[in-house]
Length: 86
Image 1 (cartoon, rainbow, N blue to C red):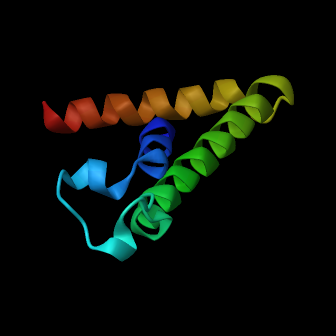
Image 2: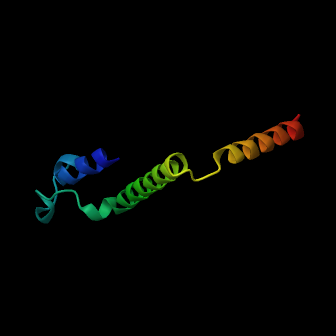
Image 3: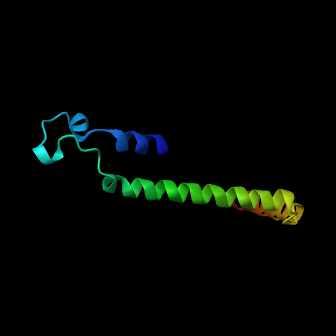
């Protein structure tokens, strides 16, 4: 995603469209305003990844748990779900 945004930012509008543009647009780079939604999505993906990485770190390094109790709860719920769908 970052690579695509970088490519767009460096491209000339005329090259992108393949058309002869009006004088005020000739030589202009792709306007960043048109990719702001993609930049927002990228920021959200990065924030989510940072959050998950920190959560995993806290669970594994800081003993944020108890992990075994969590695994037992998940196993029990999974077994109940399997019984209900069988």
